[in-house]
Length: 286
Length: 286
Image (cartoon, rainbow over all chains, first blue to last red; front, side, top):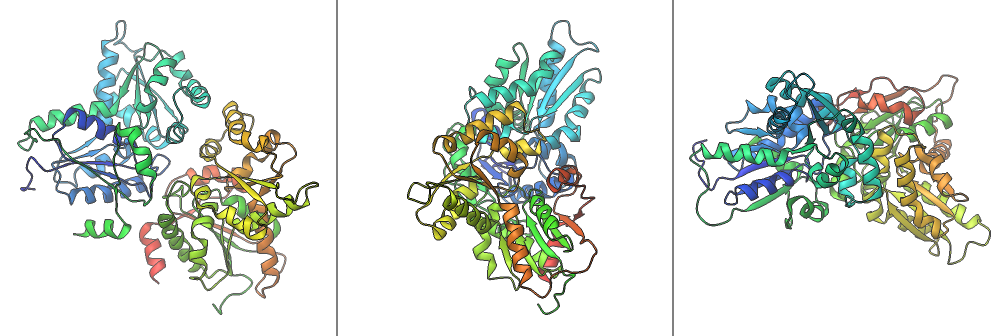
């Protein structure tokens, strides 16, 4: 990939629209970079699916993004990062950054900094999709950084549909569900809670209200930091005064992405470009 | 299709595992028929997706089922019935039965039979996925049968994840969500409520408790009746004493389908056969 320069985009891949929380953080931290976002909205969600399927879908989407000659690729989807990143990293000629390692690193740093912590009793909480939890990838990442830290994990399958339904954090159902899901973390005194799904930062305030004193780890923000650090070591960092662009591609037709996107991106996203399955296949073959 | 005989299967297609409620009713009513079930578990759910995507996916799945030389095809998925049935029906050389018309017919019959009803004030309720509601297909089907009947429709996106999480009907979150979703039907005195998603019959008792006096329309049961009536007119009805078989195909690998299936089918389903995307493409081409 010799043709990468400062206008080359950062490719951001997610199973749907949740990865826009990562795009938002990238835009805040790296406003001059061009972003190309790919949401696999025709096959979303990945969080209930097998590793074989997630690896296959994620590979197709990243190969599509690669055709835009990105300077690096971000796997914004926690499930894809947990199930497919290791298998995919070696396949691509540009750096591939997942959201899992940055989140795990930040959580371990918080746990170690807590007064009275740092011993065998140190506990980190994790909420994520069923597939991310079952993969044990976050637990393994934390253990690699500090084998004494224990990860308490809980799948929270209702949170994504609650958020996509547009319910406010004060909604009665949201409150009841959060209390139920977060009860074990309250009782077991975790120092940090990893929000292990791109949707969850939307409910960060409501989660913080249930778990006072627990540091919430927003993987989106941590990943933007890692990307920023990496770009600083690369000659292709975007300079100049002009703001970068954001172009969105999706696999499902229709208005749903555009309608829900602003809640995740913090601003309007405009109409995304529909990538038909034929286009996806054609781009991948070239 | 000259090679259809009494051992030819009934093909049942659903976006995931909810269509097993239809398979269950077919087995109860037509125990000697062989069933081939296809669940598109790699791309489930359809209920948040566009008509273009649902038509494409449903077409692929039905073409796969057609390769098993079925005597007829049942589209057990409400979303696919609402968005794709008309487009697909003409493509296949065997009868294609959706769940929508049978559900609408039963609801209209209930509404007309209610004392004091039958006039302009007659109301039917509908709960379904976002895509089914937005398609207006149920409303159009009811209007075709009786233009004076008014359909009150509400999308209930939390019910499928609540059911797949395995929550009992008495669960506090289930109760709260049902009360909220069903409130408008209580206030507006509907005579019948169409359970317009294959998952919903699992919560029938809890729904009935919130809406006393309202007749619940289980499309799965109504569809089995229509299939039974149609088969009675065909020479290929299975006879003899032996019980029919049920073979399940899914597009996602993994244990999730098998683990959740018994709740929908009412009995264990055994391990389904994984259809890789390559197999799906190959079957479709032949």
